[in-house]
Image (cartoon, rainbow, N blue to C red):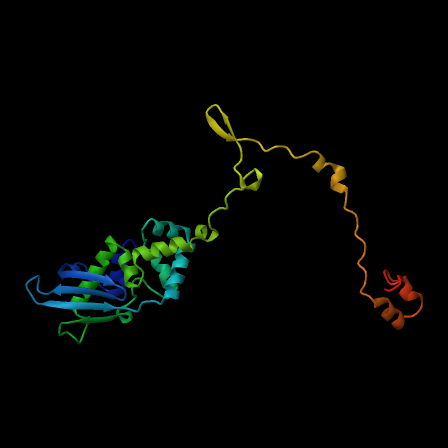
Length: 246
């Protein structure tokens, strides 16, 4: 399908040229409203409304996340373009950009042709298709997502935004000061960091270890309680229990 108007004509069976009778068309979340003049501009005027459900915020978030996860759709939407193929993403999540039939809409007209679908409804549907060819985001606005909101959500949910900005590089010098700069030939270049202290990186320093601290003394009276429960040399062999007063 090469155009939104063709997709809408195929779904709703709108005849070609029906939009010429529409004098006014407006699209807002949940409703497309149109004014149609019958009889080639000399007849009566009728008000038409095409109403559809608007997905709740969590469902709109799912749609935006799905579009943001696809590189082609993400790039096109961030360029403020909406390809016809994006309708498949909305459809897979249960929210068709273009209704698949008139049964998905509540269509009303001020004329008296209640027994069947009147030509005024078809004229407004055709005008909607023509408007979508000029501005595809009219269809997302009908679904509760205007252009600005859709682009912003897709940008926020894109993988690059989810990773966050890169962490700033730490300064070479300590204490948070800037690394010294070396100016040569008019260009500013970062100077090399000073070599580490040779003594601090020697093998002897690396393999040396601090003195082992003395074992902690047990609380007073612990030795007597252990000897009472395990008399003989067993208690005497336990570290720290052979000292008087332990």
